[in-house]
Amino acid sequence: MSAKMITRLGILLSLSLILSYLESLIPLNVSVPGVKMGLANIVTMYVLYYYGIKNASAILILRVFISGFLFSGLSSVIFGLCGGVLSILVMYLLKRVKSISVIGVSIAGAVAHNAGQILIALIIMDNAGVLYYLPYLSITGLISGMLVGYISALLMKKINFESQDIH
Amino acid sequence: MKLLKNDFISLKKGDFIIIAAVLLIAGIAVLLIMRQNSGGYVKITSFSDTSTYPINEDRNIEIIGDNGGHNLVVISDGKVWVKEADCKNRICVNHKPVYKNHESIVCLPNHLVVEVVNNKSNEIDN
Image (tube, rainbow over all chains, first blue to last red; front, top):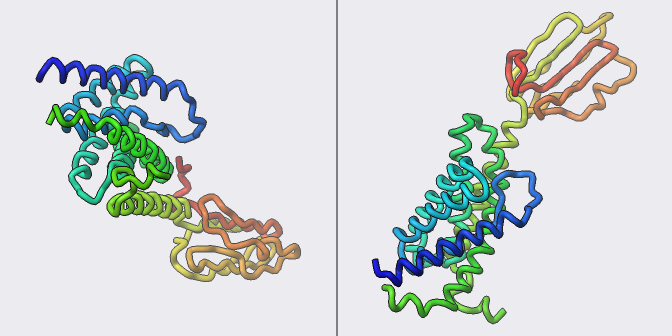
């Protein structure tokens, strides 16, 4: 991995951390836990599209660990990891489908993220009651995924010159 | 709108499939939750005794209450209601059919309580 690449990924990681922090500053008055905008997913999507799944996973996992320990706590690391890994796998698979755009990939990723969190809550709490959050979290995932997907698409369109010297 | 028209940003066919799939998942989850909310059994507590019946089996239950009072409880289509009663105020007969967990119909003069419960036993559900 070239120094240029390492620098770029480092900058992108700090950008995703800033976005996580920014997000934690904006209170969303929703009674359902786990509802968030997922702004950091903009970076994940960008890296996934231009630098591949390995780099995207590295940035995602590092971001979850650092932002978890800086801004929230261990439990958010566990939840974030489970949601994030599932989300990136889904996004990686759907990205290969020609008829799905960045927005569709983002929506699926957001919903997969929420589903992963519900899954880990199901395992940790051993209570099927958390399934009650599924409809709320899939709808909010749909909305936030659309938003994030649109921003990502916009960004990728503007910054696509970068892809040429990497691939 | 110029941005929306761009090829890279406009929604493609696959995107609509994904949106539909998400909405479908949410819908199915809502349906499952609603089904879980409707109780599974009907507990009828009369002056003399208590008995429990499954709410999904249609049946008519004749109850002889306190002071020879008489009620006819009907379970049908997953709902339960009091069809006939010889009490004066007729509150139980005019009550709409109940089907959700913890909903109940009470006939005070005949000491009758019809309640929708989750479990067959009297355990307190969490």
